[in-house]
Length: 169
Image (cartoon, rainbow, N blue to C red; front, top):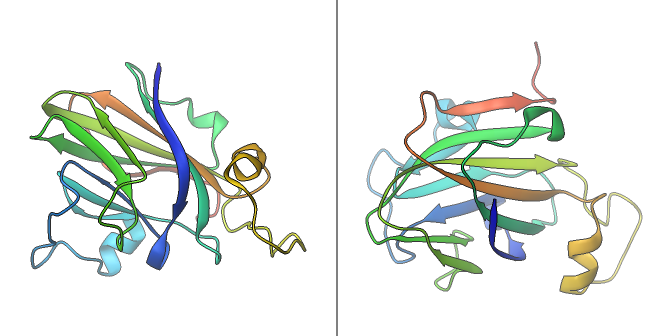
């Protein structure tokens, strides 16, 4: 497993974007609808939007290239999506960003992106905190909502939420 980057992300409109071109526009039918909300993601293989929970939308995000998916037992939620990079790049950003917070070369091709999250819905205000955290402080706060994205070679057999402790049985 290779760490490609880590950064603070303001997940505007409760969304993390994983894409190969930050300037790509959504096409008709790629945006959110009821079915896509249930599966936890929207978009197209080259531009994925993954839903988040915490109201402040201030998350620490880590990006890894891996040969294996993450162990499901280690995460509260794992959303799996097909990701295609025709540019050989992967970018992580908000839907309102023009400049990604993380960019990395991964090579052209089809990938499975696993978006693993912890402490869903928990931000510093919900814990009674106030004031802005520095990037270093946010990175260290594993009691707040945070995400690790695993990019694994090859297209997935299935997409959607592989694990979600908040889902009803």
